[in-house]
Image 1 (cartoon, rainbow, N blue to C red):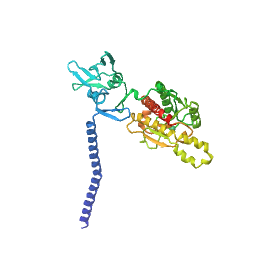
Image 2 (spheres, helix red, strand yellow):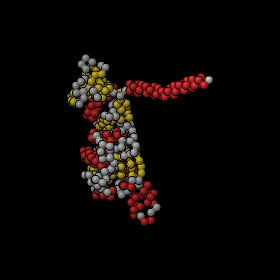
Image 3 (cartoon, rainbow, N blue to C red):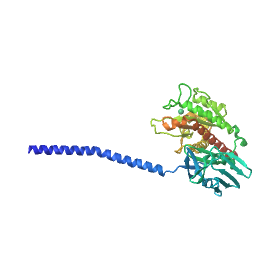
Image 4 (cartoon, protein in one colour):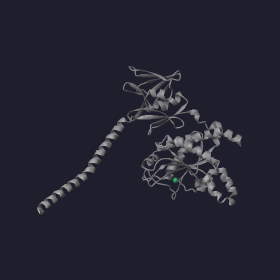
Length: 403
Ligand SMILES: [Zn+2]
């Protein structure tokens, strides 16, 4: 009895151990199965995911998404893309034996020879050399991105911008942005304020040792240079790695007769996942609420602050312009955050703070350390400034007559 019990007990223990072992193995099996399913799903998704190029209009809206072909890290599009995004009435003929493509669009004939960079345009007999020639894929002619970025501005009065990391192509009419010189706004002085500076105020730092004060200064200089090419005057609140108080920055803005204040910063977060550009608008209404409690002593000051409320619309206009232009560079839509910016409380002009990205995020840090990316940011900000200036030009007359 005792023996059987013992045997039974042993058997029970063994079974229990086996069950225990099974229980240990079971999650592993489920885990492996889950992993297999996941790998399969990812593989299936990457097979199903056809690379595309997204065409974007001047307002940042998607016009078309065209299937693309990749070859030697270059992107090519079918000839139909021309019909889809540029001219629905365009026609084309492809001579297979001669590998010659003739494209007819808007009374013009464009002749391309496959694998050759030279393009001829008739009437006029103009020739253009593309940086990448067209190719043949599955017996069909394919156009390089260079066809759109290099040839379209010559054919039509457009500007074409390509974002190679996101595969976005923006075609915008040249005259949407009124040239600065012709509208008497060449005197509109924009103050760009690179945040922080000096040894004691370095701003935030990236894991690579990159400092906010250096990123924003380099970008501010790049922006000043790019803007100058477009006739926009940009003054910097600091040109070197020096410490400046908020008061000194505002003083520079006032002395330079600035009419717009754009402060450049970078973000940092405890979470490595926080990333992306943020735009902060100076909303003086918050300050107005605050100052109303001490209004008896601040009549003159209050008047100034009331006048500052007029800048809210302009600050927002600039923020929207920045959002539209910078969205082209990012995967996630850029947020505009509306709040009273104490740092800019004395800047009696429209004011916006642009946070270029999180130095605590690996992707943002990598992007902001890449001069090609920062150059495209400087160009996008310049386009935003152009957009803002042209909106002022359009609004100038009615505002003056109202007053
Ligand atoms: Zn900062």
